[in-house]
Image (tube, rainbow, N blue to C red; front, side, top):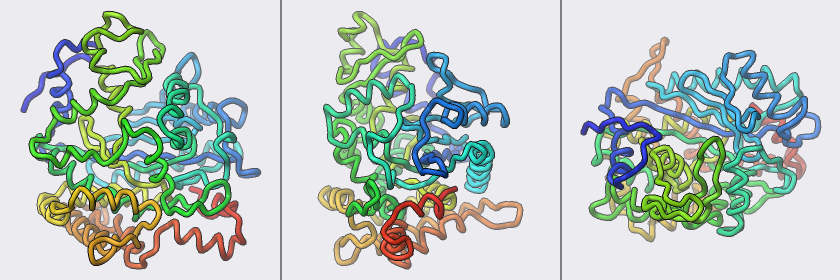
Length: 455
């Protein structure tokens, strides 16, 4: 399918333009890329507190230092730096100053891991003289919500007001969670559908393998991925497992229908965010928004709206895998390895579909609902999630081996998945390992996590 390119500021006069926008992401297999994103918590090394935006040792100064030393362009909002751009990558701020790298679309995981390492080195070089460190975990282990700072971004102010109207943990999602995600391409609508279904069904497996958020405010919280649990009480209008993806006839048009039913947050116009929280994109398409009378949305508005849906797998012009807690550097490379191995090799994709195609709706939801607390030890059919994870990991590793993308030393991408295989074989998640330390060597304190697991 060849979809004509449309300028971002073009008004949407026909809903079919929204379908075409998503379909324009189709790429032949040779052009598929891997885009990896990860978030991390900043903290001051002396007192472990999260850095505020302002001040000599604040997040703004960190961004300006990275930009000056490493050639990033600064993006400003109301004259304040809020993001950095370089080539096809970006560094952005989550609501409480969690630093996010949105990596460039790369050919293989060797390149991805080099990108991650370069980024962490650049950040460390500026942060350490400021007395600042960074930690990869799924949920802030020590500080209360009211102790977290807020970054000066207009969209976050809108979400901050609206989130408590829809759930109890939306502000925790914004300020106290971190994730690692991978964005992957599709060749056609049928290819997208198959990948979407496999990814949704197996997303709880990624949640279990990456579970690394067992502490809240210095104490065990009873979960292994509390980050994943937070999403269940954030906003039911825009989260979840998207059962309709498994229905006959699913495709781009059905996903657009879903998006049009997701309430809006905002429209960015003339350099400012207009609060439209809770209003209907369908009304926007009809020029009937009370705050923008007669105005039609543009494709830029639709692209922004796409980012305000938060299901376990999200479709844009590519598919986003959203189920994993943030973690240390080797797991930042392991997540793309897991999903590339499953989805970018046709034999692996077929095997993964065979693994999940007979899951019932109830089973998919039981996995999603049970994994945040029990992770690999959640019972599933006559075994547990661990056995399902080992099967998925075997499929993924074989897929990576068949891809045969080798580095300069002749190694393929399969070794990047080894940390996950180790967790599954040991039947112990990162969260369980930290809980052992908490109850043992750490003497009931979470403070050592900032030293022993910092980047």
